[in-house]
Image (cartoon, rainbow, N blue to C red; front, side, top):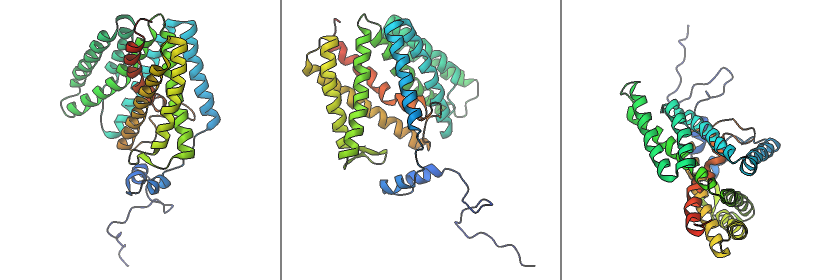
Length: 312
């Protein structure tokens, strides 16, 4: 009897159907080539359900608008709920990279930070950040010392990224003119996304960060800045009595921070080898996939409006 043949060196094991074993296919597609366009062409099709995405987006917008205009305290509850979901998605995603940040103290600390920001201001929000990180470190000690530093580092990333940055939404909304402050911030982010998409589709030729987000271009960034500057100049003047020139500066500042937030999350997902933070929202992916640019824009908007409209 002829002995069974051994697989040649370097050949990949196949399934019964003859296809290669499904493993980290996305990572190989993303990083197997130095050519960003070639890597992008091997990625699976996005598969976004456009009607579902539009419906979910409108639904989220309606919830935010309803809580802002009809029940201000409800906006705080909405922030806390979004923080809880965001923390859950981040811990779940980081598990793909082997980290195990403790979920319970992160969720409890995130809700606490939203309340502290609303009722006690930025200093209390910073204190909540320190308390949450310390509580997570102590909680993680219960599982032993192995991997403790890795998991606490991951917990710190989650705490800063989700509840700390998200807490600035409460800081924006709490003053008497808080509704206007939130509106100009959200509209600036929406105009950033819309202007960047339109300019990128029709004019985009020079990639901004091809190894992180191949579809982003400098032309798209210019469209984002222009759309946000024009829209913010008008809205800040109408709602907050800020001179149009400074409103345009506000819009450009929000654009820069929003684009950095988008790139930061793209870098995290590429490093973890995942496409979306979760599949929670039909047509969108995860909640964090929609909030990445907003989270980075919130502290920028809060700081700029504290200078441009301090007495409002």
